[in-house]
Length: 281
Length: 266
Image (cartoon, rainbow over all chains, first blue to last red; front, side, top):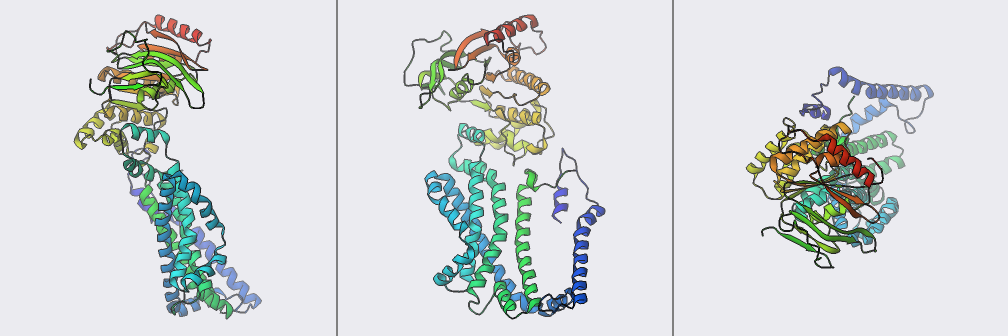
């Protein structure tokens, strides 16, 4: 879908590119084929060796469970989604602000950066219980854990992006009498955008991990458990199909966010940046 | 006088006022540069840039060419002597195109004029003329990465005139181009100079480029940077683009300069 949008943009120099149906099939068929072959092999292994369902459910059982449990997985998915996405937004806004502040005041960069790294190196599983103690179990804690783990990639990339502004362009702006605010909004932030978006991509995955780890530790808060809770509970009870279903749901939550970031990236960077362009043949 | 910039170094005014005083657009009066760590970048230099002339600074790297250019731009203050610049309307052209990669060619050409607060309609018209002048009409909506290196440099040149400068400061603007594009851009610059009557301060390490473009050629030496000699071109770029030039005299000047620079025929 995004590929077609890319192509509708007029490109006077490179010339318009056509995406044919054959090309689309070439993109879609191989991974789908690989998936089907994989599932078939899985089913065969389970049936031929008579592996019990609690160890490794067959794809057929899975499909059955998925259809039967779709109603029950909805709520935990929604809970985790909310925690991860709100955490991601907090980390996104906070990370860009931290990056901005550190790039503006060298002293703050010196003072804060080591602690950001420390924050990043603390195993999240180890620190999550602390947040449960402080904030109590529940969505708030999980959101905070998600935001905390997603903050660093955004802050670090924003800082790196802002610091790599072309010095000659800065000189050009200065000579033209541009104020620091104009310089920031018209030159430095747009220039840092590719780096910021890279940070957000990393943060997208991290936020979902953070939310689920928070749920592992914090469990059910206020009667509503997320996917992390479903995963621990299904594992303890050896309800493997449900476990798989929860894992799939977590993938979905993660991919949806990642996809959204990539869409925003394509839209914002459009034609001007290499990373947002399809590879030329 | 409007827009007079008089940047004095700590040593104060020097006695060595040149005869061009009062008429030159930019004037270095015993201007020197010693950095805080004691590094001497430039011995005192006396040099005057006459209006509507191209002054080329040529010399090996580390000879203080860029320091002089930055002084003229007001980006660097002489630590001794002084610099007089009788205009505020100036543009700087870098060795790289130095474009905003996320803006269209049109927006890039308008950039400096926009930052200076030139009204929209006016800067549109200026940009249109500048784009036409450098032969990029039809590429207004393209993005820098879609253009070749030579074309990007043209965009940079178009941008530099859209603020309608009197003084064009160019720091090895064509050094990154291949010889073919370099000659073409040189011709482009002369064209620009003819149309606008610009005063140009042009840095290069190519002696042939210096001789082709300069009315006045200042040869600099290095360690520390110092002015070796200033030549008046025996056959400067004519106002009539089709007029013939005295190639023999220019060749002789080129030989003379390259001997002066230690036989290094760059």
